[in-house]
Length: 259
Image (tube, rainbow, N blue to C red; front, top):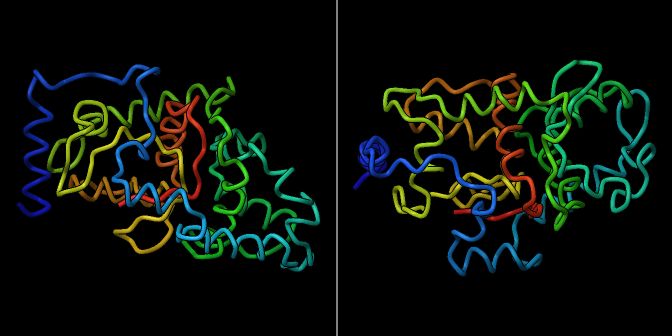
C-alpha cells in the first residue's frame, strides 16, 4: 500500500462513526515516545546516539558567540543557560506583550536577535535557528510542560483548537481524525501518535535532520492535500500553542527522536 492509499484508508476509517472517540482525556494523554519501537527509544535515551544532540552542541556554541552590530552573545544577557533557560521552553508559545499575541520559541530567539543583538533574523528551519532552539529546549528536558496557562493566551488556544478540529484538504481530514480517533494504529508503516509535542525540535529519521513542530504541521497539511500555512503565520502559532497546551503535565524530552 503506497502513502496516498494509506491516507485514503485512514480517511475512510476516520469517518466511520464507530471509531470517533473524541478528544483524549487529560489523564490518558501520552508522549509520542510511548508509541516508538525499542530502537528509536534507545536512540533518544542515549545522548551519544541521539543525532539531535549534535544540534544542541552547535546551539551551545552559538549561545556564547557574539553577533550583530551590538556584538552581544545570548550569554551576555542570559548567562548560564542551564540556569536561566531551565523551564523556559516548557511554557512556549508564550504571550508577547509588545506584539499582543503569542510567539514560538523560534520567534522569541529572532526577536532577541533583532532587538538586543541587532543581528539579522535566522530563517525558519535553518541549522542555526534549530540549533539555538534545541539548546534552549534541552535545558527543560524533564520539566513539566505548562504552555497555555497564561489567561492572555485563552483566545489563541481556542483558535488552535478550532484549527485542530477543522477538516481540510482534498481528503477532508482534521488533525483530530488521526490523533484523537485513530492513535495506536499505523499509517504508511508509521505509528499514529496522539500529537503531544513533547520533544521539539526533534530529529526525525524520515527527514535525516532536526525539524520544528511547524515543519511537522506543514507536512501533515500537505499529506491531506491542503494548502500549508507559511512558517510563522498566526494560524500555525495558534495550532502549536493548542498542541502544547493539551500536552500540559507531560515532561519535555527535547531533542526527541521519531521515525
